[in-house]
Length: 87
Image (spheres, rainbow, N blue to C red):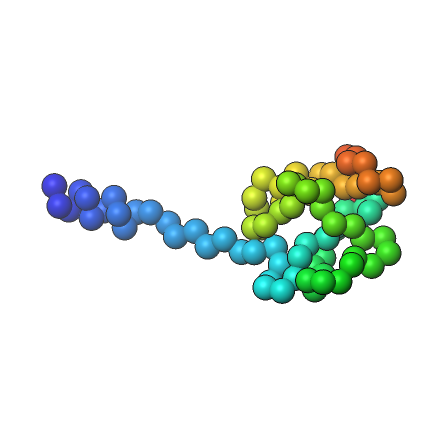
């Protein structure tokens, strides 16, 4: 029985979650295009970049918002739009 428990415990894979941005930075997305970047805390995004909408900010690579924003972006008015195929 102890052997079965040990194999169950060692059979788990360790998942390391990678942050979208390093400490002291926050994620931004390209407006009307696919892509993202990180901006130092306290600075505003450059022209052509925007903060993610509140509550829809990706925090870890592969999380639900990270995946969502791979097929969506913001238009010039801040509305969420789908990216065209191939973007």
